[in-house]
Image 1 (tube, rainbow, N blue to C red):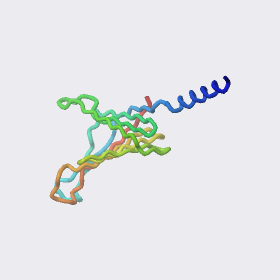
Image 2: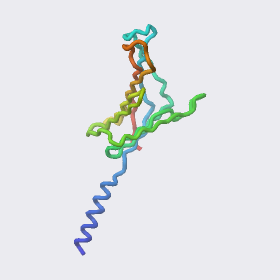
Image 3: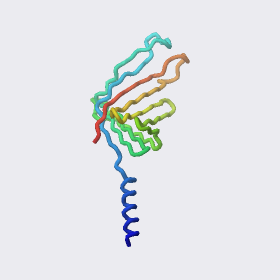
Image 4: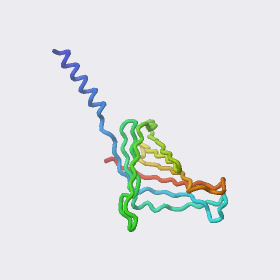
Length: 151
């Protein structure tokens, strides 16, 4: 009887540890800039542009190696509506300091990294605007940083 009670208690302790709650964060409005080709069209002619991210409210959920990022316009903007994208990375790279994941498609590469100590979300985007006659023309690059708060 004692043995079965001990096994049951051990099983319950192991189960509660395995079913730990995921960490959830909501983030402030991100800050960031993007780089675009300048007016001359030369590869070295680029300009930094402040992005208007007032309607963007990122959110982060971390559950073990699963990293979920919601990014987009969650507040309706006059004439544009809302556009929210949620990315779920099932095998994100996690260290003691951060968790990082990448998303790549035909035209865009994005890196999302969440730093545990500062509770900040970093997003780096690189995208080709389209085919260019100049092979040295820089792609559109954007970098954003948002401070997050645990829910």
